[in-house]
Amino acid sequence: MFRAGRYLQLLHDPARLARAAAAPSARPAGPVVIWNLIRRCNLNCRHCYSTSADTDFAGELSTAEVLAVMADLRAFGVPALILSGGEPLLRPDLFDLARAAKGLGFYLALSTNGTLIDGARVGPIRGAGFDYVGISLDGLEATHDRFRRRAGAFQESLRGLRLCRDAGIRVGVRFTLTRDNAADLPNLLDLLLVEEIDKLYLSHLNYSGRGNRNRGDDAQFRMTRDAMDLLFDLGWERVLAGRPMDLVTGNNDADAVYLLHWARRRLPGLADELAAVLRAWGGNASGVDVANIDNRGDVHPDTFWWDHSIGNVRERPFSAIWQDLADPLLAGLKRRPRPVKGRCASCAWLDICNGNTRTRAFRLTGDPWAEDPGCYLTDAEIAASA
Image (cartoon, rainbow, N blue to C red; front, side, top):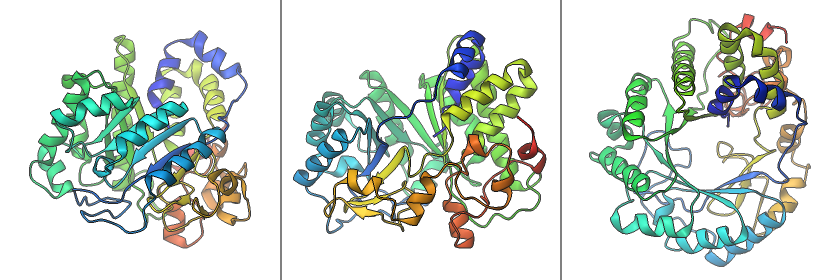
């Protein structure tokens, strides 16, 4: 994920930016683990990557198995767990697992659709010690309810957001950008300001099918560029006003390069130092600093590689699976630079983006190392010198 809000704040403090540019690169001992504890969900969303449904799925990890895996993850140096689903609030032992995770010292986040957060649940969420709760909104009411395929879902999620905020729980909105909801983004950002919610995680939908033509004019790429312009401009306005927002994007690490070009236009004297900081960040972290465990214990390089398992925690400890480079995909993801091809191989900013998520290339071509069809940067932008 790309913490755009953090880099905008650095640009506003040149001395801090210079220190960050000069600091040695540091990586966590273990990856952040996104854990789909349950596949069951009370909704049937159009863009669900886990193909969840309101039914029980066989073979899910038991409480004892989850606790054992947690202990291994912590010993391996995993700093943070993001508990997800399906809808994790449907798992009866969720709060017991959360308390155990906090007892082990994890940073703990909950990823939820928010519809089940009511007056009875907000107390246990706070009591379990979650450091952050992310609630998904797909736009304003009509759009959200259409995406979630249920009337009233927006109001239920908004209720959950407000209850968490009022209970003092750190809460933010998760938004997946698509052709069908991009027009809602400006109004959604206005809603966040009205509701005094200062965090937005914008996820790019992992489309495939994009070709190499007309990246500057293509409707989908234009939509993405417009969304990033809106996000960066608002983030900068908030920094200047002394009320910065925590703006994060995911699933398209070209966003970092796009921010660099934004800074070159706005603050050209700081662009070189920003580039150094972004190189230290290092771009896409799938298979390196980000991992996924699904409801049955299969381990994946991230949540968008559910069709590729690198092992199962019932058969081997996560720590052993994650360090085993016998799997060609995992070995390639861990390489620096990655063995990417085409535009990605010749890109001047490969050391910033790290070749992106690789799932789009695989779904379009069958080759995980082909050029990323979701890169919205023009040929001129990827050829720019450092």
